[in-house]
Amino acid sequence: MVVVDVASILRSDPLRWRLLEVVRGLDLPDSWIGAGFVRNVIWDHLHQRPASALTGDVDVIWFDPERADPTEDRVYEAALCDAEPSVSWSVKNQARMHTRNGDDPYASAVDAMRYWPETATAIAARRHGLSGCEIAAPFGMDDLLNLVLRPTPRFSDEKRSVYEERVRTKGWAVTWPRLREVET
Image 1: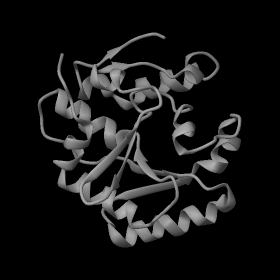
Image 2: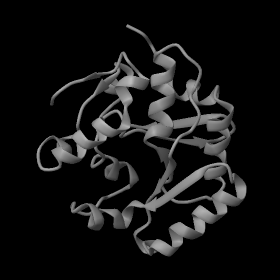
Image 3: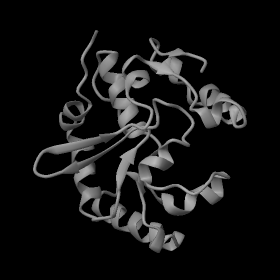
């Protein structure tokens, strides 16, 4: 069995480590960078190659029911763009995202991740202290670390077509050929 320290991999990637610090500087409650930001660098590591460039949005999630107006997210996106303009930032307060997604209200940012499409995508990181890095993975890290692509419970049935479309259009199996899709 291969032992993978997700936090150490993030620490060894200068860009990702710096971006985690930039987001920490916003001092948002219950904030994380998640999804492909973490998943992709781990899959690269498991394929024994350097970290790939960031593609698409860098997903910043946070949680504060008292500040659920979407204009707050745009203010933080602008601040992040000022700090690192080369990155396409996406900031979403998860306290309101349940409405858009047709879910029950979320209790926290990590709880909201339980409603993301894939178990290996439902992972996030944040910095703390001088060199600390906390990892959140509501479905655990086994699928991520074993190169398994699997829908979360919400996307196994009623949102199955969304999951299948993501698998088809993202091209993950081409980018990471050791990845294997597993049914729930």
